Length: 306
Ligand SMILES: Nc1ncnc2c1ncn2[C@@H]1O[C@H](COP(=O)(O)OP(=O)(O)OP(=O)(O)O)[C@@H](O)[C@H]1O
Ligand SMILES: [Mg+2]
Image 1 (cartoon, rainbow, N blue to C red):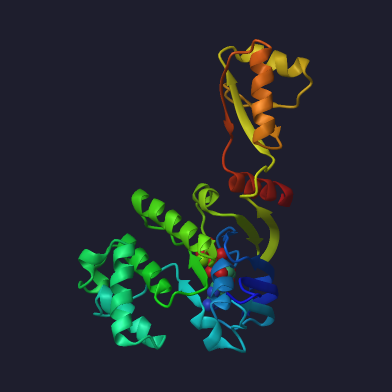
Image 2 (image 1 turned 135 degrees about the vertical axis):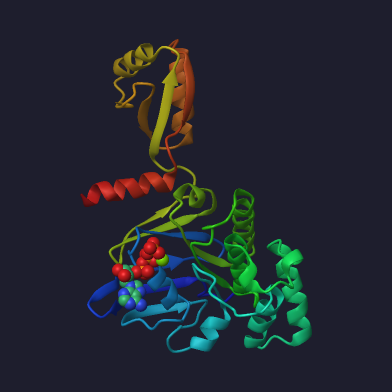
């Protein structure tokens, strides 16, 4: 890993005619971490990823990917980057195995090594049994998995994955999460876009939020205590709200009246709250985070923008 590895993008812009697809994006994704790229439909995620992957030229701004500039050092940058597009595309009559060996050849990996690597990767994404089927007959989820294998052929330092979990069944989603965590643990930089925030919660260390082609927030997810809402229920809801009122704590009652939501700075505060509620004789029946960290951050941003 080069000392200035990972991804850095500053002031990146790209328009398509009158459409400012990416208007001003700053983004940092560090080696050894999984970074989530989050934004509504049309916010510029795919356009940004294409620029980071060296497949689309920015109108302005600077980009460094694994220490190389995808504009001025395109081949070097691309040789260090694995790109998984949101749709696999058509590969005519190539088999799954041939897709991988063809990509390997494009990266100038010799034939013997390419065959071995293709076999390993097909195994990794559980496609060994379909290795010699034409890629176009694979199901949507199988194509996604082949797309992931294709991104890994040349053992890149940086992985750019556009909606990698879409179309995957629950087992394959878990496999994807485990694989991405493992790649990050091995020092790779992983940038992943998705709409499924609960899924990202479990795999991301950091999150970059974009909206209307601009970076609107960055958050760290994994580093311990994140302020968030917790949902609290009790056998006697009135006893719970009475106790909260007496202790002067801010809370909101859920619309259906079954529980209350309390903003807490982290797990230690949640444990302390539980201890004092139980100590005061309130029969707490559950206490858990209300929704994921990313979902809450996303909704809070939407709120700010109203
Ligand atoms: N090749 C293109 N020509 C014209 N407009 C484009 C092109 N590519 C993207 N756009 C426009 O740029 C904006 C950003 O698109 P982009 O695909 O980057 O969004 P996205 O965040 O990936 O959305 P989604 O969540 O739906 O995948 C959209 O308004 C889109 O219509
Ligand atoms: Mg997209």
